[in-house]
Length: 83
Image (tube, rainbow, N blue to C red; front, side, top):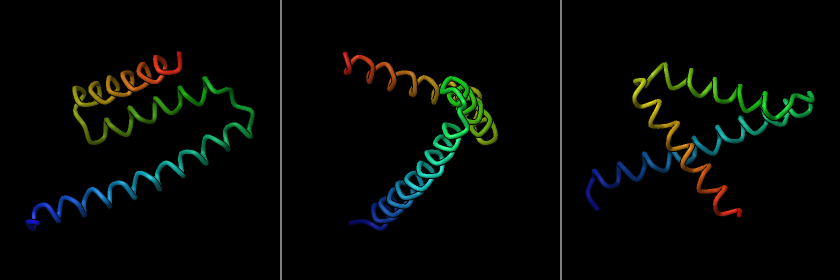
């Protein structure tokens, strides 16, 4: 294993751990919104706006559009699999 491969694996493992931690925080916030009787459509809209704002701080508009298209494709795939 090369040093570059080992470094890439360490970066990927750290990213996976960070994603898990972030998902737990987001899940907790979604649960809190549900406990406050906020409708799921409002929560979804808020999440979408926050994603766009977060991406806008570090990404180009074109990359933000790519991210959103990837999300749309995943949602479409999940919907097609459930039918």
